[in-house]
Length: 355
Image (cartoon, rainbow, N blue to C red; front, side, top):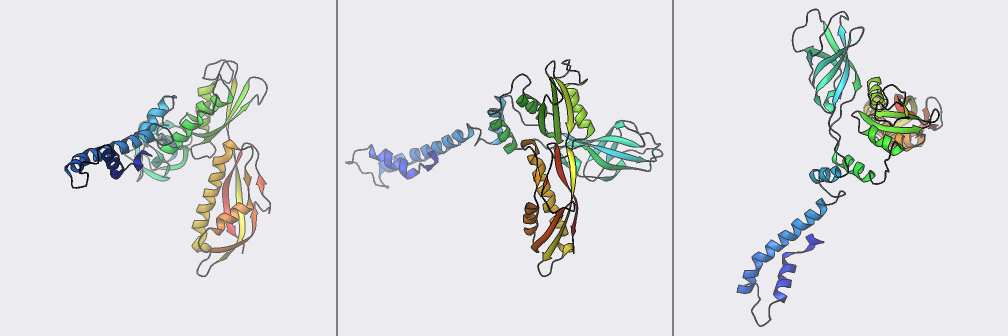
């Protein structure tokens, strides 16, 4: 490769072109005169190697990958703001849209009043930071009669700007997908461009000719909230009548839904190493099992049915420091693997050591 070209290689090639009757030793005037040029040529070769890497999507840096992807109409998915649910006490207090609340992680602004003292708040900064806080928030200005406002749930997860490798993968995948006039690939591509959507399955003619069903996950690969489902519905076919008021082709009646989450309680008997017990290992066990179930949910859009395997759970548990043996693992009180239906995804429920 071009980076393998060294100063010595260049000097040898240049000196070979000079008659041997001349003094070409390293201390000679000829050698000294050629050396600076050789150093510059080596530098040029190195820059050419970098330019070569930057010219192709599989090796380009983020800056140039964005330029390359743009030639196919692909741009990084932008960072989005988290939308959360807040509960006011007392529930009779009236809080105006635009009111700002602060937390240690993020400031939130009220965007909608619901019922029973519930409010929709939007993070004032984009990215995943807005997802991290649950608890009491403080109004930026005094609100008469308000005793407390507490963030209780996430309506729509905020997302950071799309990462370099995810963008690279999406660009590469674009060459395999043949998008055209409302086919499966076009529905998938357009759905994944909607902020908040993490994955989608497309079901054509699911309820007869002309019907299309989109089943989505949110950015955390969990069941999408109703607000996100409605957003996607409004974009494709707001009235579900196939009249072409959204981006779906005329005659396509589109229904948007989300995955069904199936909770798994895990009971197992663990043998611990000396100095370890459930209390010492439980945090690591829960973390690694959450990671395992997340990996299964990430596979949902590319598989017909997810299989939750006891052997895989045992393997994950055995990787926890302090755990030396596992036996009798049960999933929802059953000692068998579980095969989920096409639109079901697993979530972790309770975990217990069955001693």
